[in-house]
Amino acid sequence: MRFGPTEEQQRFRADIRATLRTAEIRAAAAAATGADGAEPDARPLYRLLGERGLLAVHWPAEYGGGGRPLTDAAIVAEELVRAGVPDTLHVNTIQIVGQFVLMAGSDEQKRRYLPALARGESFASVLYTEPDAGSDLGALRAVAEPDGDGYRITGTKVFSLKTRFVGLGLCAARTTPDAGKYQGISLFLVDLDAPGVTVSVIPGIGDEHFHRVDLDSVPVPRDNLVGPRDEGWPLLNEALAIERTGLDYYLKAERWLEAALGALIDGDPDATHDKHLERIGRWHGALTADNVLAWEVLTGLAAGRVDQVSAAVAKYHSSELALGVAAWAGDIPGPGQRAYRSKFSLILDSAYREAPGLTLSAGTSEVMLQIMATAFDSIGQQEN
Image 1 (tube, rainbow, N blue to C red):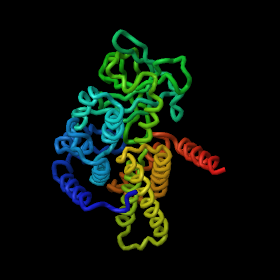
Image 2: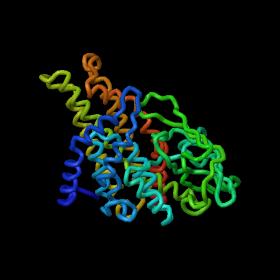
Image 3: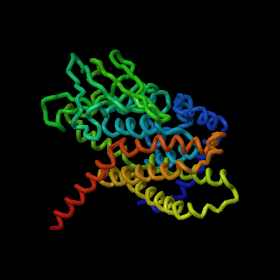
Image 4: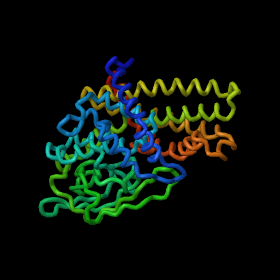
């Protein structure tokens, strides 16, 4: 459990902030920020960050990283968001897919893929969810059939983000379709430029677009199988736990609350805003608790522990908190602020449209509650 940063962490954070304040990175971050349903290409920004060694500071140097602790990677993630860097490419490429390859991939897979991801030259997306397999990934239907020295994957994946900007997908598919619901699943690294891959946009209300990925007998080399064949379910659960630190959603909630406060002051600089003070205080208290929950998960991961229950708690609390802040803050910008499109009104308008999806992605709130309830029930049975 982290109760405060070390002196080394404080120095590291200060160095990261100084780097992110340079004019070149600030201009690139502004150009990469979407609004009103437009989704700019953020890859030029990430190439700048990769050149400065900021994308994968915790990976071993042989794979393009800086060899620093995982907690330092969390510090970088915090400062990227606070500097206005759109974080989805970083979350998907480094925190989820890259971290999964580092955890479960072969040495050859690590050497082949990780350095380019760390340099911001290659990007990745997650291909788990299907039209009929959302929170219950055991219902997935995509099939990987043996084909010579490899496989051919056929199926449809939905609701992935930034997919039209990436070249690599971490894909779950059935290698033994007749096995049980949670058996016979394998994980693959799929070249999204391969023949048979079709990426299309799913209409939505968010500034970041969801995508549909149709896989029509897509060739995948045997060497791109991650982990043992048919043993993907345990790996998938570990990957989801890594994804559920809650840090990214905490940072969104923090940013949106700061924008709400900015909108209040911008709208009436001389007002005391008494009617909002109690609610603001409660939001700040919840943010403090949320930060502790996220860092508890991160500290465990840094020590090599994957605690699915703690991750579920952190993910549930952070996504529900972000949703609550966005819903509360949606009415704060006045008509005048909306008319001249103040930066605060743009942030909060985007937040209002994005926030509901946070309680669905990486596992719905209901699934997180089920994980918690099952764990508490097990503890109760042990005590009896």
